[in-house]
Length: 388
Ligand SMILES: *Cc1c(COP(=O)(O)O)cnc(C)c1O
View: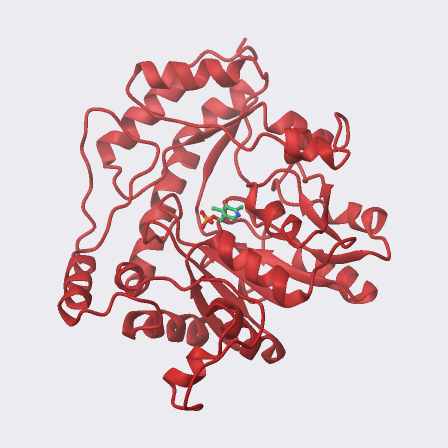
C-alpha cells in the first residue's frame, strides 16, 4: 500500500496523500453506478466504526459540521438553551447549536493541552445548560473523567467534537466513544479524509432510529432500503446529511490501513519533538504535551512562541524558505458573532494569549525525510526574542 510523498520545492501546510486503493474503490463505485449515500462503502465505513469503537451506531455524514448539527437536533437543543464549548475552536462547534437557537457559552482552555479547562465548568453551568462540547485539540484528549462526572451530576449531555482526534485514546479508550454522541470530520485537512465528510457516532441506542430519519430528509427511507416498510414517508424534521458513496470509497481506502497512516503521522510528530527540543528549551518555546495515560492522534504539531510579534514573523520566515505554516483559531468569543453573545476581552485569557502565539508546522504524509530536515533547520534559524 503506497502513500505517495510529494517532494515539491515548496512544502505545503497540508496535503491529502491517498492510498492507491482509493482509485480502485472509486472506480468500482463509478462502474456500479452507485454514487448516492447509504451504499456499500458507506456501510463498510460505518461497520468499521461500530466494531472498532464499540459504538451503538455510526452514521457517515456530508461533513463534521453536519454531524454536529444532527447531534444538536437529536439532543432537542432549542431556543434559550446554553451550550458550553471552547472559544479556542472552529466555528462549526458553535454554529451547529446556534442554528437550533441555543446560546454559546465560551470556556477557556488549559495552557498545557489547549483543551477546555474542566475546572471552570462548574462556574459556567446554569439551569439552561443543555450540553458540553469538548474539542480534543490537535488530537490530545480532554480530561474526560472530570468532564463526564460534572456533566452527569448536572444531567447535561456531552458531545465530543472529535474532528482532530480519530484513533487517539484516553485511558486506553478511543476518543469518540465517550458521552452521548461524538462527531468526526473527514475534511481534506484532517488525518483521514474524503475531501468533505464526517460521521456521527451514537453511543446511546435511543438516538439511533431518529438519527437515521433526520439524516434522510426526515423520512424513514433507511427502513425502506432494509425492507422494513413498504414505502417511505415524511416522519420528522430533517435535512440531507448523507455522504456520497463515492466519497465513502475514498475514506474506506484509508480506514483499512489506519495503523500505517497513524504510525507515519506519529513518526513526523516525534521527529519535530526530538529535533526542536533543544532549540525550544533555549528559546522558551512550548510544544504540545500529551498527558500520561493518553495517546494522541498526532493531528497537529504546534509551537507556542514567547512573543505575539513573533507569530507573523516566524510564519513569514518559513514562507521565505518555501515552507507553509499557519496559526489559528481566532478566539470565537471575540469574533463579530461571538460579541453578539456578549463575548469580550478578558473572558478567556488563556485562549486570547495562545491564539496570538501559536504556529502550526506542516504535518501530512506528503512530507519526505528531506522536507522534515529542511523545516527543522528553518525553524531553528529563527531568532526568537527570548534567545540570549
Ligand atoms: C474541522 C472541524 C470541524 C468540522 O469540519 P467539517 O469541515 O465540517 O468536516 C469541527 N470542529 C473542529 C474543531 C474542526 O477542526
